[in-house]
Amino acid sequence: MRLFKHNYLVALQVFRRPGVGPPLLFPTTADFYRKEGRTMANPKRRHSHSRTRLRRAHDSLPKPHLGLCPKCGQRSAPHQVCGYCGTYRGVQIIRMEEVTEAEKK
Image 1: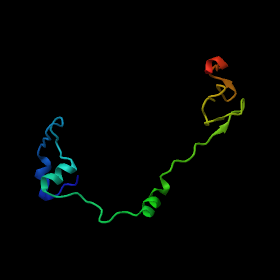
Image 2: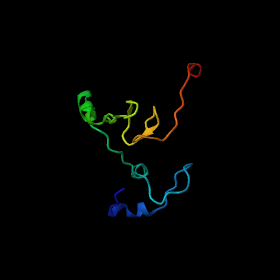
Image 3: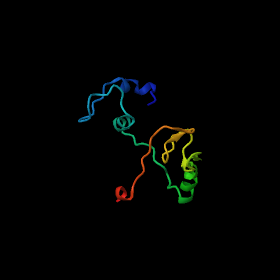
Image 4: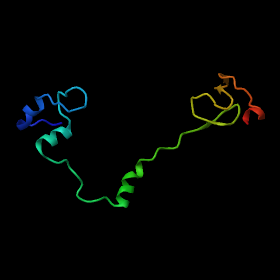
């Protein structure tokens, strides 16, 4: 919260919010606006679907880079133990057990 000359005394007071834990040394933004009788900023107009989608065009996560395990050929994350055969850089790290048909059911 930005402090101005006209509200420095307000910020130094100890604010108590009923039912919400111990008193706060500094008020939250909502407490400041509520005390001063102001309203928080709201957009003047609604964003169109096109503008919203243009903004969200860069929010997608990239696909994970997967390499091939040299032993079994399965896809695995780089610098990780293969989840299928349990090897890392040609060394057996985890002993994997074969799953029989009876155990699958």
